[in-house]
Amino acid sequence: MTVGRFITFEGVEGVGKSTQLAQLQGALLAAGREVVATREPGGTPLAERIRALVLHDRSEPMPDAAELMLMFAARAVHTENLIRPALARGAWVLCDRYTDATYAYQGGGRGVADEAIEPLARLAQRGLMPDLTLLLDVPVAAALPRARARTAAADRIEGETQLFFERVRARYLQRAALEPSRVRVIDASGDVAAVAARVLAAVQTLESR
Ligand code: Z5A
Image 1 (cartoon, rainbow, N blue to C red):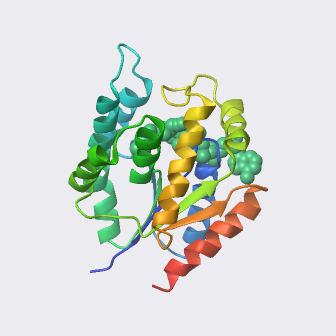
Image 2: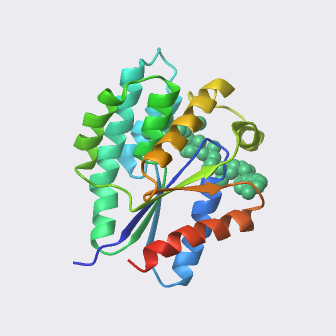
Image 3: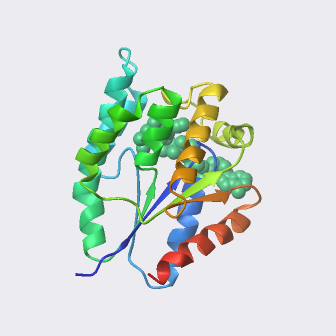
């Protein structure tokens, strides 16, 4: 069976993940690859409905446990219905956020214990892990203005404080230090082309596998 590649993009909001994902998608398509570009939470019709709930529903307070489980509910649907079939037919799946985001946002940001996250990750992923995670990194003070200049109305998470995003970034960097062969920290400062060149260099290590 042909097996594709699973690449995830991570980082605080505004760091340039969506921009870099599109750049890499273009480069891979030009090289003749089948590419599936997707995002979390979301990526399938049902998972996008869960996304709308978890990011935008303000009808009543959402406990951290509910936010956590909705992220994993969306992930289970997305993993089974889109990511696994795409990988099985040999596609390269480029995903804007995956489980590292849960450790960073719900873990680092909200303070949920890893012991609560780990069993849900096992259940939702059934052993699937990204082949490569590109952690785009700049100081929070540089990333947030990019996102906020663009977005009129913040969602439930985007409205958090700078301190929250500092904790998110710290947790991401901690995870990268623990798994350096999977998680590559990409300096996301400079213009789009400069960052894209760094991303491509990291991805080229997968081409030869
Ligand atoms: N979340 C969670 O809590 N737990 C989870 O498990 C998962 C997610 C999976 C999803 O939000 C939210 O869900 C997210 C985490 C949470 N919340 N937050 N915060 P989203 O999908 O709506 O948005 P996002 O993932 O946070 O990303 P973003 O705000 O869209 O940012 P981005 O993709 O990193 O950046 P961008 O859109 O590519 O670029 C932002 C702007 O900067 C744009 O105008 C670009 O043109 C510009 N840009 C990009 N690159 C550059 C460079 N190099 N220089 C200058 N300007 C640039």
